[in-house]
Length: 482
Image (tube, rainbow, N blue to C red):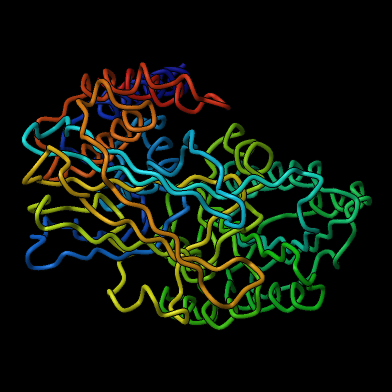
């Protein structure tokens, strides 16, 4: 009887604790509610300040095609917690979503566009949206793929939301393989091992059987796994193909080189091989977000956080064309007109900034854009003139086609008449709504008068273009945030 009573009391306490955490998750306040047992690693980047055009008219940065920060934030809210400020990278919130941008002109792999509107959180300011889209390639015309799955099977991965969800996701990828595509599997715990040599996609049962054998135990020799995976990818390299290592891990490396700097150095050496890198982060409690975002950044790749089955479909089915790079070393340089713009602030992209001279330097590494992928950047600006007598800025974009070593330059004039935000395009309204949520989660000093209702007013009528329902999910997420 005493045992039953104790269990009842314990259950009541747990229900009470869960209820309190759920309330905190959607409070919209400044309290960070992470359990003491968490040892998740994030790096807090200082927000970009306003820059006077008269002092520094040129802004240069690399594109960021990641979406990991947004999915991670969603995980925190669903768990009844507030995401740490350091986990918020606003550019990844925006670029989690696909925008309705035009296809590139003939001969180019990327299109450019821009728009100016009033700023919702500071009515004295304006917002400039820059939009880019990688060319769409029909499935039948996609290059052959040489994938190497690099799977963390150390002890820390032994849970359904880690190795379990990766096994499900990789099976989804196998279902989407074409017969001529190849896939190998490398695992690592105390040491690296080859679970499956490179195998053609028509042997799906054989590949899935290998995935079913995965189990987790031991320490984590991540660097050894990375080296082995790249060696296999190089051995099976497809000229003009999609050669890619896909790493699935919580990032808890503890054997061999394990610091972020050490791993970045290894990845930087490997990226010159023409092999791309996708990093999939999973789990909670010991997630090393900083390390995974950085090695994806330096490894010619992208970083996604996988928190649920729907996210698996997004990565491995709905947006699988992102695995096919159409623009590498993609850089943006904006030159503001000091006759029209007094000052500017780039929202997000804090760890993607480049020096002015890096823009024309083809040896400087930058971000990659996949087929059909859209990239969006927002500037908050103070205008001197809104009558559009001259262009506000020149938007220069430099990239390399996958098979080329020399970059190409595209230019676009930012010269349209500014609009009220409620009469701007859906692309603009939705991007601003998502950026606004990022500013609030970041507890940004620049968030001005932002409120939850402002986000909803902007976003709820900007979901006409919503191919897979992620904009609608965003509105539901914000609606439940109280």
